[in-house]
Length: 165
Image (cartoon, rainbow, N blue to C red; front, side):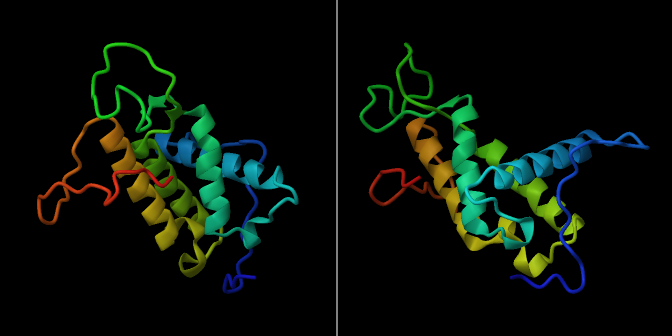
């Protein structure tokens, strides 16, 4: 069990009774927090927020892929690496890396705003950062978009050219 330094992590609210109008970001953050809380409740057995860990977050991100709208070509596809494929294919739709990155940022903030400690934040772990990096690189390769590191300006590709996500 994690230590919240006297704070109890708050369960997401089921209704949105608002006195003041929330910004678009705040509304989305609240919606994401409620969605994640609902996801945890549907697990067998249900996972209380205080017991949530990075594995639950990774499972949630993978679960969200079924609602994705970004075509990610698999290596055997004739359009793999083609940024503008000329015809449709049967490759899966996935959540775009940018959407997942923004979602994790909002959930990371919501976790701490709802009483979670920054030291136990499951959205801020190295495994989440690694997963997002792999998604970004995999999607860039599949779509034929070279990913360039900011530090050295060199193209970065997966050593074996495969997506491990």
